[in-house]
Amino acid sequence: MFVGEPLSAMLRSRYDDAVQDVQQVVGSVHVEGERPRERRSRPTVATQPDRTAGLPSSAIHELRTPLTSIHGYAQVLQRGLTDNPRASNALSVIVRESSKLTQMLVELSDLAELADPDDPALPPACTDVDLRELAEIVSESVTARDPAGHKIVVTGWARLTCDGRRLALALTHVLTNAVLYSPAQSLVAVNIDDCRDCVRIYVADEGIGISDADAERIYQPFERGANAREFGARGLGLGLCIARQALQRLGGGTISHVPQPSGGTIFVLELPRA
Image (cartoon, rainbow, N blue to C red):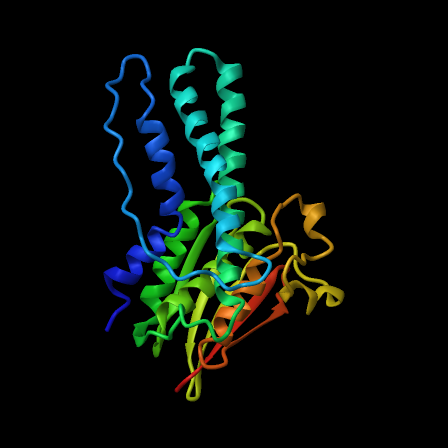
């Protein structure tokens, strides 16, 4: 079985909850010269309560609700103030910054999901996955949200029976980390190596690199490399922690890294065969 549309749709709609909320806000406001759109109610989805201590899903939802309104109304005002460059530029900042906050809340939600290894809400869903197709879909999802114009190239091929959703989650955060800490418009290379006992996915970037002192710390929650602030990239320091936890749920998968000789970092995701 290939990755298929269900997984593809999940990856492309990772932020759909926030996007739908923004669209509802935008659609409910009449802008001069436009017909108001009908506001559609979202279906109620029954979910199991989040038992993760310290990161309750209700708190994440409460944070995202006002943020969604700020983002949506800023977009509405942008459309109505095209003749005022100063106001339009200010609103662009609001839209950009609220998008970054939304991504941070998604990371907190991912961490909360993976925090409890015995959580029945996350049963394994193993299928035969085309890893080349999965990596290309994840790459498309990451570059679609990347304003800095990075290019991700995928090479190699392998098939693996695994939980494709968890692997996609891990790879999404590794690639997001790679573009976040690399110069604009630089290359990120993904290579899939089909070995006898495992599959390895290499992610090579041209970024700021990782010092020996930070080699283990960067996989801990809310930790970032010492040179991250100097580079100017902002984040919560959760991406690599989420990737490690997601891989561990794939039958004991691991993540490690080595420096590139020419600068940057090569991350190695190793996935055991069942």
